[in-house]
Image 1 (tube, rainbow, N blue to C red):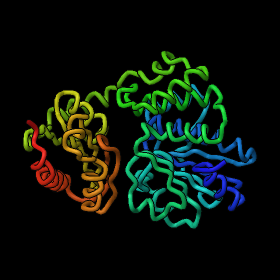
Image 2 (cartoon, rainbow, N blue to C red):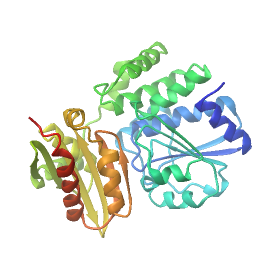
Image 3 (tube, one colour):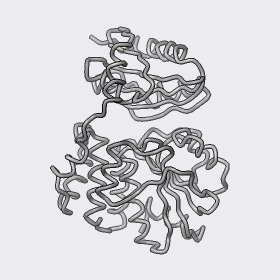
Amino acid sequence: MNGMLHEITSILEEKNAGTALILCHHNADPDAVCSSYALSKLLKQFKPTLKIEVASPESVSRVSKVILEHLHASVMNERPDFEKADVIFMLDTNTTQQLDEWGKQISELRLPIIVIDHHAPHPETRKIATLYIYREDASSTCEIIYDLFREAEIRPSKDVAEALFLGIAYDTKHFTLAGASTFKAIADLVDLGVDVQEMLQLLSIPMDISERIARLKACSRMKLMRIYGWLVVFSHVGSFQASAARALIDVGANLAIVGSEDKGEISISMRSDNEFYSKTGIHLGRDLASRLGELLHGMGGGHSTSAGVNGTGDLESAFKYTAKILREKLKNCPRE
């Protein structure tokens, strides 16, 4: 066995690991919790005595709770006992700030940290990582974990196949963002007994009233800018920034940037449509979020069309700085 999985098992063997801690970002989505579930099952294949805990600061998302109930699994949101861990995994999490206060603590630990992610790598995360497994071409972290199963020539059990399917389906927006490798993985998972309609139904939970209100507030508060023909909107809400940004894309924006500010703490979500990325080449995680994170003395990162930033400062100033970056970059690729 050679490759990514070999590197992981080598670290476990070198540390004679008895306890592994898998960390997901706050408000962990289905890709985070499902990839963690599948990885824990895979690690047990090689080290049955390994004690594994999966944790996410604060809690997991509403749809993740439904999935965890289906899988009869749990994710703890209380502070893990970092001192007892021999190895720490960060899944679907490319910055330590996505772990809130836990991020500061693990940065100070002298433990092997293994990062598995499909977001653009963050330089600060690279510094603390013993092993960084990264594939931005992958649809999701679950797709990377599935590749680890294939590398090991291990057939996932039905529950693991369901978890992997759910994570992939969620992050690809029900396969609208899937590529050839993703569809091959999905076909394999269906062959393992996954009921497609049943799984998709788990992802289709009604939006609660708080999220609906946040989306509507974002629309009512948005500031529309037309930058070299591209429709860019900025807005602010107290919560559900990512959902609000998606809503603004759905109603017609090419790029939506939605933030919140609370006692100097800033959180920003960015979303763009596929046309914006394909015609401008602007990668939200690398070209906007990362630079904005530095300005806000925090961290930013993400995908080509989906990114986030956490830091401190003034939200309006952050929006103005983002608009300045966009003017610089978009002048060479105006929308016809």
